Every structure is written in structure tokens, then in C-alpha cells.
Image 1 (cartoon, protein in one colour):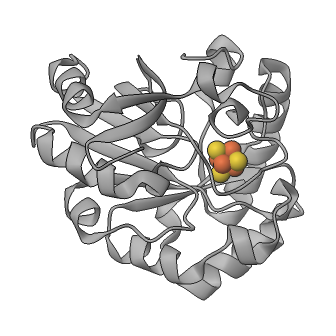
Image 2 (tube, helix red, strand yellow):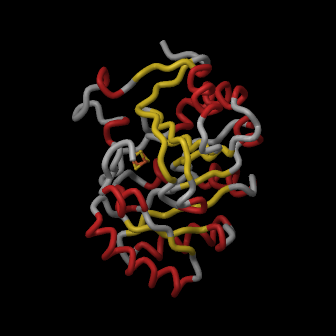
Length: 232
Ligand code: SF4
């Protein structure tokens, strides 16, 4: 049984942050298993799709003390807690972060559907929030939770990062930004791509959309550099 003392982990690896406000920064990635969404283009299905992947092969239960020790000794000085959806395990995550030295920069990547508890809000330095648009496939009632996004906005430490397939996505993005009164300088558009070729083509298209709409551009450096290879 999972407990506050352990986390269901998919993989832990050192790399460069590939996306968003800290793109290019060396970081230790801790990828948690499980997700509450089922995005059609998800590139980390091995964290949750246990019809296609073996749970026994893909998920390890790891003590929070062991993960904290790994983070504390990592030369990167930055940890990115990602998934899957890490906030599905937020009680144990809070326990983990209580053990992480305050000098470590902590980022959490979330789909923005689960409200973070106070202990996480006070410790996390940067929230990378990626609300999913209609093309991801889940109904809006599952993928967009405005009350949760408002909590993250009010933390003053959150960036929105939208996965974009094309210009049609801007209607949905503008409506959400307007409803939330989200500061535009904290919004990234990022191409939906899992291969370098598609990434390159869509990055140019998304760059034009950013320019036309006063939003920030994020590449997916790990796709550009390593083609979506796992643990890179
Ligand atoms: S929220 Fe993220 S991890 Fe979950 S299905 Fe969507 S893309 Fe995959």
C-alpha cells in the first residue's frame, strides 16, 4: 500500500529542463506514476496506461527519504516533479519536500485539475501548469478546473503552458485567459510534437501565433535534441 512515506515512481533522471520558463536549466527529473487524464497525444503513457504497459515493470514504490537524499546530492540544484500527474500523490510529495534542502529549486508540472495543499504552495518555487485543450480528448469538465487554476494563479509562482496543434486552439486559450485574468507574460505556447520533424515545423507556426497574440514561445528541447527518447 502507498503511504505518506513512499511515492509511486516511474523514473528519475538528470537532464535539462526542456520546456517553459526554465528551459535549458540542468535539473533532476522525478517522474511520478499515474494520471487522472487520458490525453490522446500523451508522450508518457507508460506512467498510466497499464493496458499498454506493465504496471509491474513501470512503477516502483520508493521511500521519500531515498528520493530526498538523491535530490539533495544532485549537482543540478533543481528538481522537477513531473508525471503523469504528480498531485495525485501530493500528501507524500509534501512529506518529500519537507526533507528537501531549502536551497534546491523545486518545480512541479501539473495538468491543473487538482488543487495543491498549503504545504506544497508554500514550498514550490515554480508551477508549470498545462491545462489541456479540446484536442487532448477528455471532456472539458475533466480537463479544465478554473477554481484550481485560480489557486495556482494566486500563488504568483505559476506559468501556464499550452500544448498547441494550430491556430484554432487560440479561441479556447483566449477564453480561458480572459476568465482567469491570467497575466500574459506568464503564458507559454508550445508545439504538440513527439518527433523532431514535427517539432520544427510546428515551432515556427507556434512562434507566429505567439508573436500575433503577445504570448511566450516554449520549445520542447527534449524532443528537438533526443526525439522523445525516454529518461532524457
Ligand atoms: S495530463 Fe500529461 S501525463 Fe496525463 S495524460 Fe495528459 S499529457 Fe499524459
